[in-house]
Length: 151
Image (cartoon, rainbow, N blue to C red; front, side, top):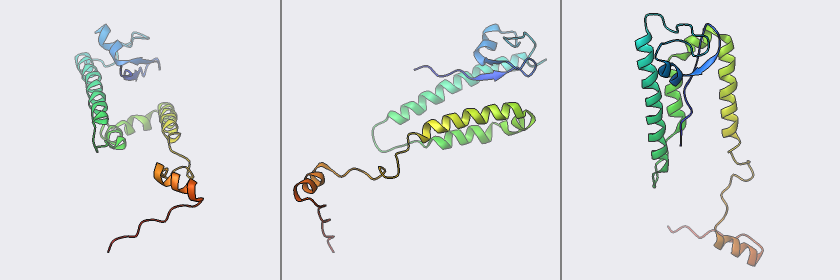
């Protein structure tokens, strides 16, 4: 399953592009307006863009593999996201660009809303009783008593 490419934005023209587009052109310019993205740092831009794309594919692949392992391990998604939010240092960039901040918050809220729809309703949150308990309830018209606890 392919990974959604990392997007970036040219601060000159305001258009979005994928990092792989910068790598493909190998000139360090905005794929939309042609303006140089990082004067005197093109080699670093190209190297880090490649590293970020590769790292994302590796991270997603490893997390997907861990999620699919049989057994009793569950990777906590918020810990991965927390590292991205806190360790990359985007806060400074977002404070300086209120439009980008609003757009990022809108996208994050959209993603969060999709996860919130996964949460079961409060009334349906209790686990369904097993087939034996359901059969006993149907036969007797009442819930079976819990087994006494051994002392």
